[in-house]
Image (cartoon, rainbow, N blue to C red):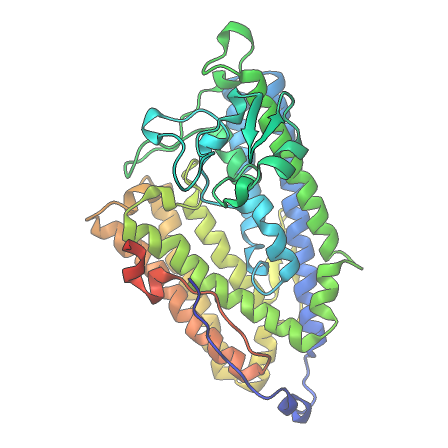
Length: 420
């Protein structure tokens, strides 16, 4: 499900390039500084989420559940802007599945609607329901899950049996535990898990409220520890920072790989076009909370941030520095203008989706078969992302660099395969 854009120029030509006002080393340093700020903000927001989860478990109420949900949505804002680092940065890509894997077979975690079904040929654990089962068999071994801990989730359950849909950790496992399944199909509506799923004693609904709380707390704590680790990778002396900055030319290639891969195969293809082709709300990125419009918007903003070399922190502070835009403008001002315009157009298209959803036209509804307005909104984003990728290719050629492969998607490159 990948398509390679093979964009190769001679690195030797770079040595003949006159000294530029902006050095490549300055650009990758700026990129690493912004990454550090984004992961630090993500960590701060995750800690706030964990606090709200603890409050919900300690004193369950409708208000406490709403506070935890609001904290989850807030936590997505800085994190989604980091997704541009996943592609091109092996340290991030190897780690990302712990915190943002999707889609998931939520029956692994907790109770689901009867229509969900049970174990399947593809996944024997699809309806395991760890919350309800303190002991179970996994890969022929008896597992003691009487205590639900971060280690149980990360070391035993996550991607159990090597199946990617067995997502036991990260934002989307927490999302499911806060909202429950979204059973509204392509109608407006998110998951409607009652706060009483965490209630004490006889007020508990759907049984196992104590274990459900244990799972939610363990997942939130694990998210914090995972983000602590990644924030350290981008801090001074961190491995991710070193990998980007030790060779500025390679660092520029990493930046462009992230921009092109997230724009094209991941966001335009897997996250947007595929769901529209299938008319399937299960393909939404934030499907339980109906927060997908925000995920798309902040993913796009992360790409724009990378090119412009700027990021607005959670506290309103602007972090900025030498950028890819500066480099391109010195070589080809017209191309820089074009790239800026394409990024702005994409953000406009994604903002239209976000605005429509916030006004009451849910992303679920946009995916409905035959809804021309919804299709126009989503395809506006898809087309803009594809168009900006074409200009990113030209930026690669202009700046020079190693052989770069952008991620692809069958939904864009081989649509017939989607229905096979």
